[in-house]
Length: 385
Image 1 (cartoon, rainbow, N blue to C red):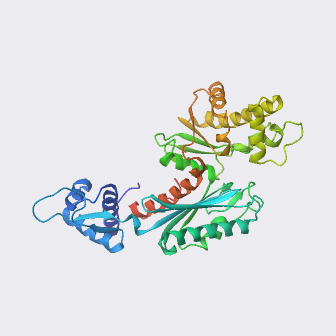
Image 2: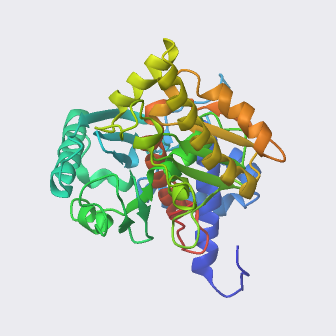
Image 3: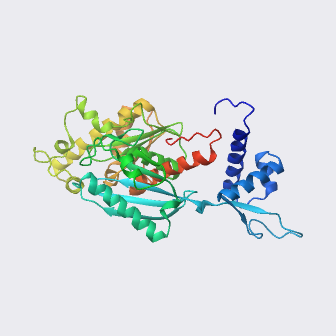
């Protein structure tokens, strides 16, 4: 927090409001006395702030029976944070599907929906599918569009701060797409766009396998792996948002692409999709020597990519997610090879959130934005962690 100076009553009111609101959100229908004790503010100040928050719709007086046992005399007034006063959306836009999750202001999920999308769909078709999924979810839950306070969006590619996809080879027509600007036309609230692996890293740190660690790498393992990392509990995007693009390491003297690595015939594997790759892994498990060699090449490439990031960042934990995490035999070779490559091998675990990680991370980004608005003491909002 920057240096505070005197003579600014509005700043003091913002500070007091943020402190009281945080205390209200953390407690179960607290009394004014409790809020005074927790915040260290005077009773008249707390009472004034609470009344002001009631006026904004963020706080409501709780029924007299809430939050305690029986006491003689007039019960103390109790208050609660109205998590239902607004809603958030987390949106995943992927090669094969779009997924949308809806929560209240506490981050508690109310409902979700996902819809398939053709891998070759144009950018317009894919965005139309997103809008249709959002409309269906809002209609199903009865949440008005005007109740949305922020929308987080996660997508493959290198994403700039304004939501433009600077480079996105996984989706047709995605490179150069002003994704944030396009989606903001559909909402009257902030829209925050982030890389999918970065969003998944945030999700695992929030409520997944990395909940107890602040220095982590999340690997979105697939045909072209990507990674997101948190350093000291904060998302590390890099100068231009390209941190973690380990799928490009083959350009640095490792020319073999996935379609060649996974080939069992000497010819590039076509079409290069999940179904074909699963078939190669199944054949390897059944004893096919060429398939086993292909799988070994694939794993060596994945380990090489992950090890480069581990050596640079020295994380406590590596979380493996993405569809390849479900392939039999991925985790053990990764652990063994990282132990060989790395000076201090990290713990390696599978994602706990699975296919929900990306959309959950997008939701967390929206929640971060709203929390920045509600709890910032200098009127500043940090939209990226």
